[in-house]
Length: 269
Image (cartoon, rainbow, N blue to C red):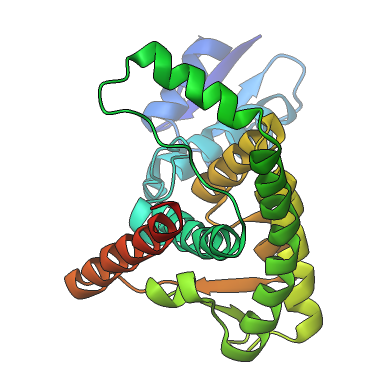
């Protein structure tokens, strides 16, 4: 289709639609100027010609887009990373629980009749391995392991009572850790028992010194590092408070572990 343009009392054309669109875009022709093409009864402004309606609307959108302010900058998406270790303190929480279990182990050893057989100072590695195998196969050692395994669930009951009353345990208190509800209050006895039960199942895998224990402890560690919370605390909507460790508290923890080892060795000497 060819158009004619009324410009300053003169007729300009014929103009192809492509040329006319270019002139409209460049501002050489305004939508108010009159045009005519074959089949029209009279000259009309470009804005009133049906065949140019879609073209003029497209040009108007182009003008609006050109005058629109630039889009706000958005940060590029980042890959999910492990939370900073200082935020969730997995090692601090591990050593706190390990200290509690060590206390249980020392108490069991002290009250048991188990004795480690003495080995000559000049014994070879094969002799030591033979003694270790003999020790592991002894009835006294098996009895000791049974006592340890049975004592862990009993400890979890005691632990739940301590958390309900004090908000902490000996190991947790040693490292400044406290367990509170989402509102900051102490846990009810029910919540404490439920939490200790979940830790016993999901955290230490019934503590049977098996692959289950390794798997559950690994799962708990990864869950803590990726989501910043252990499953049992998430289920019960609990918070674990662990302030930064001071040098004095670290020294106190080392001395406490040494004391436990000495108490345990007294029974073997």
